[in-house]
Image 1 (tube, one colour):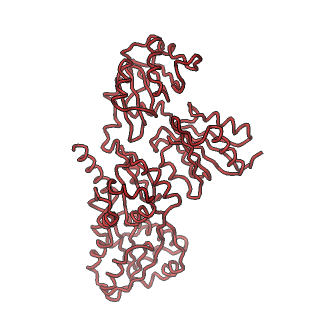
Image 2 (tube, rainbow, N blue to C red):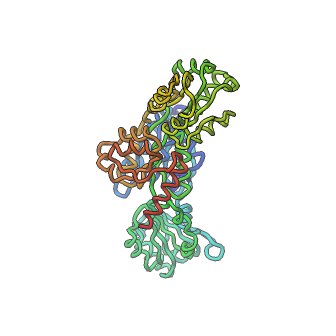
Image 3 (cartoon, helix red, strand yellow):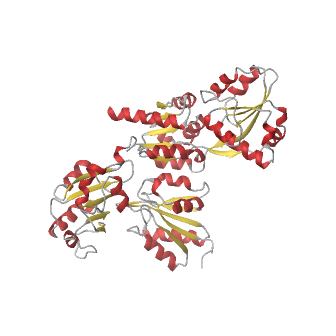
Amino acid sequence: MGSPKGVVYLVGAGPGDPSLITVRGVDCLKQAEVVVYDRLAHPSLLAYVPAKAQRIYVGKAAGAHTLSQPAISRLLTRYAKHGKRVVRLKGGDPWLFGRGAEEALVLAKARVRFEIVPGVTSAFAVPAYVGIPITLRDEASAVTVATGHEDPTKQTQAVDWEALGRSEGTLIVLMGVGQLPQIVAALRRGGKPASTPCAVIMWGTWAKQRVATGTLATIERRCRQAKVAAPAIIIIGEVVKYRRWLDWYAKRPLAGRKILVTRPQSRGGSLNQQLAALGAEVYQVPTIELELLHDARIKTALRRLDRYDWLLLTSVEGAERLLVLLRELRIDVRRLSHLKFGAIGPKTAEQLQQAGVRPDVVPATFQQEGLLSALRRVGWRGKRVLLLRAAEARDLLPEGLRKLGARVDVVPLYRAKPPAHLRGQLQAVLSNGSVDLVTFTSSGCVEQFWQALPPGLRHRARRWRAASIGPITSQAVRARHVPVAIEARQATIESLVEAIVRYCRKRGRE
């Protein structure tokens, strides 16, 4: 029997939109040591996977299989028997035409532990994303889901299409667009009227979603006109006609936009959520991760806070780390009462205020230049300043304060470094040129993005549109000869999102 620690999680990734994965699915990804994933699983889901985990792509397309099905099953078995926590990440729900049961049977016969994590099936989610209700009290009280992955003209069929042509309710066909002419003909032979409404949806719930609608008599021509091809699902029934009133997804301001977020994993959530809520398809590929420093200078400085007059923080991460260290070192917050605080922006200030510390200075411009300008009004001659920041931060602020007469101790709390697998993730997302915007929230993100960018993709950089959080970040982008299409009016995530919406609305009118 395999290792008792070895286990395979058969996880449904959902239909495409990464926000539709289940909470249990995310938990499995976060614990994975090996991830075996399909082409219909959104690349952003790999951001949940630990950096040290092994990623194995086994995507299948018509006529192009990375690995055969038996080879995939052997792969899962082998890693589990070596004691690994394996996630088999499959598009949609692996229990519905996803071959999940086949893989589970192989694992059961090999006496390998496994768990089924159902996913949101494309059969139900994709119609919802184009405004088609699969049931409606006055139109459809039954739903039939069939696979179209077989030829309806063959002698022995698993699906009786002519019988389905006589059935009532909504018919949903997965993996059937390649056989659409034969399916339509069989349904009509069974008695389904030529006037029956029909829709074919390609890449449902993705930003590249494309829809063709018509009737059984016209749908083949409409698909050719709209260039709809696999992967797609077919919906047949009177419910299709309600799309004209219920197509909510296409009305969101960023619908159809594909946006790459390069912000660190710990900070990407707010930007991701705001963009996704406005309809964007978000690809999260953090270009930096923060490594906490444990230099003895940090503890020495914090234990001698009585020596300082001012404490300055230039990031939310710095404020968070300060509060953690104070707790770890058992330093009573009352020992900070003599200090004056400067915070680079409102988010940093909010972090301090959670611990009951109200900053004395928060500049109107949220960068080192703005903080230095706001601090110039203070008399600095002989003042002692503790500046807590990132190791690679610019020296503009400490040098400026020293020129004003302050004695500044700079203590790095963390440093930025590129995550493992960064180059591979950028290759996967950018190689097909499908991203509309690349967002940058710091010059560090720009630097690591450019360093990790595969050389074969650098020549495309001028075709990408960059969205920058402020002028310093924009300067770093332009230094790599990448055009900056969007710059936030203030260096905040909210302002960056507003700028992206303004830009996309303007482009939509052009």
